Structures are given as structure tokens and as C-alpha cells.
Length: 70
View 1 (cartoon, helix red, strand yellow):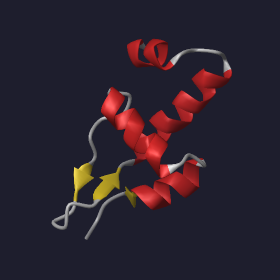
View 2 (tube, one colour; view 1 turned 30 degrees about the horizontal axis):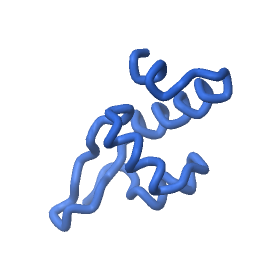
View 3 (cartoon, helix red, strand yellow; view 1 turned 120 degrees about the vertical axis):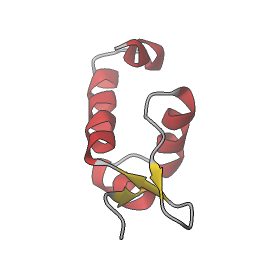
View 4 (cartoon, one colour; view 1 turned 180 degrees about the horizontal axis):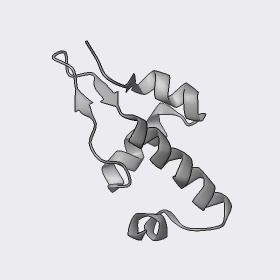
């Protein structure tokens, strides 16, 4: 049984497109998520909190590179 949220559930919860979440993963802003046996991404509560932090930091005018350094 999964612990966490699939990417579509996380996307709805934090109001961020799935493609953006994957992009943040590629940039290293989000840690790679756990995977199910079927290789579906399963995101933790920490990933949700990190996405909310990224959204707030962007509102304050920080670039993704600056956010990554934090």
C-alpha cells in the first residue's frame, strides 16, 4: 500500500501542474520520490511542504536557482 500521494493528487493539492512538479525534480528542487512496484511516483508530506515553500519563495521574487540554494 502506498504512503503519500501520487503526482496527480499532489498537483491538485498544491495547485501546481504535473509537468512543473517533474521539472522541479529534474532541477533538483525536489528529492526524487519513492516509487510503487508499478513505478508510479509517490510523494511524501515533505514534498508537498517543499512545493508550497517554492511557491511562496517565487512570490517573493526569488529565482529557481536561488530557491535551490536555500
